[in-house]
Length: 105
Image (cartoon, rainbow, N blue to C red; front, side):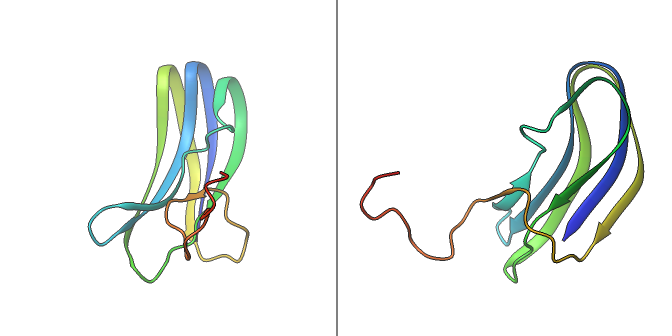
């Protein structure tokens, strides 16, 4: 699934983020993307941000949002949540199969 937002920031002292997470039956996070490494700071013009996560059959709910750390303002427009075949942008918390049996990672 893809969550998209067009955001604009003004004098953010810290960072603004677009957030998406997929949760399992007990509320555990199965995958997430908080735009880490792609944080938006300072004064920016309107910018589209797309987050893509795999929503597995075992998923119970998907959380989406806009967040800011620090002072400033953030505006959001054009919020969309849709199916996609785009590659995943976030981090998957669980593996389909065990890995790293030789403890090299």
